[in-house]
Length: 438
Ligand code: PMP
Image 1 (spheres, rainbow, N blue to C red):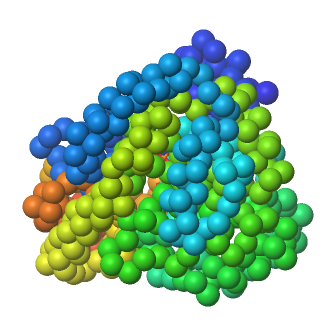
Image 2: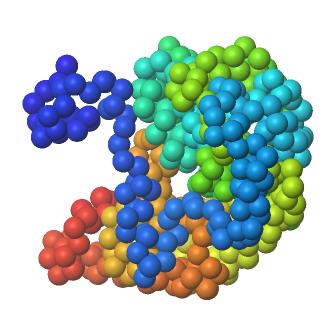
Image 3: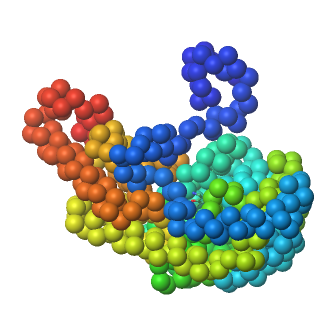
């Protein structure tokens, strides 16, 4: 039932307002998305989006693969294909996963349109309205969006520099079970977490698998960044020790290029069958063309060497960001990632990263406010900083600009506490004074 005025589905200015399905209530533009328009202006240093640095991929590696595809297998590459993906690329996927300790069969791999679509398919198979998905606090904004679009509720579980805390997981499960809630999935990004930058320790991986098994909760292990380490590889995947209770997701987006939109799920046999049916109903078949190009690339190019090249770029950028944070923002706390794309910054407690954003954009730096990564309003004084895309020089300049913003806000707060909220508000034209001072 809808009421006049506005609803989570939109406003009644939309002529289709009363027609949308209930599940669209979970569809809202992510904070990351809204930022892209601003952040893409050339004068803005964007530390916001998580775009891989695809310029590090030599164009001839891609054009060579394209040419070979059209020369040797054009009619197949241009045709519809199997809903599960081509056998060749699934063989390759097994080889890619074996470097993280995973052993599976070609039969249990399902190729998807990026791992984002695999998140959607798994949600479609398992989530009823009101079901619970457990996820780290914070968690990947794109996954939270998918879970919500199936009207599931995300319950966050505390994490620290070693990833999700098993005791907090047990506590959360017990509390939700006592309330009679149905917990369907445990969603984890164990390696070089988006957005927190941390990696789940090996001991915790084992503990968490046991907790999930004991409570009959399916683990969704999302691992797009695992191969992008900066020296010390991440521990082996959780899927390397447990087959039946885990759906594992991988992607070529960060180790090759996201434009091809090829990812995959490795699932226990029964789930795999349903995933293929769901994939066929959603898209008939993943792109034959994209799979063929990636297959050619993996056949002929030194793809492991290319991953090393990516690692080198990202490590330099991570280092540039850490040095700049040391130099310009000593009043904040940050995580130190050993791979991936992201650093999680904690501002002094009374700062609000979302209300600070317009000021940051004025200073020509963009970031993603921490609240984007929580389903429950958490992350108010956090920021996700991406170091994957801008050059080290731009990263340093971006952090310098950010420090101007943070210090400006801190100065304002000082003035605020001296002159009182109303005086300060009028004087500086601040639209959203931090809640704890207003
Ligand atoms: N999972 C995580 C944790 C991600 O960061 C992303 C992309 N940002 C995805 C899944 C989706 O990636 P893709 O669809 O490009 O494979």
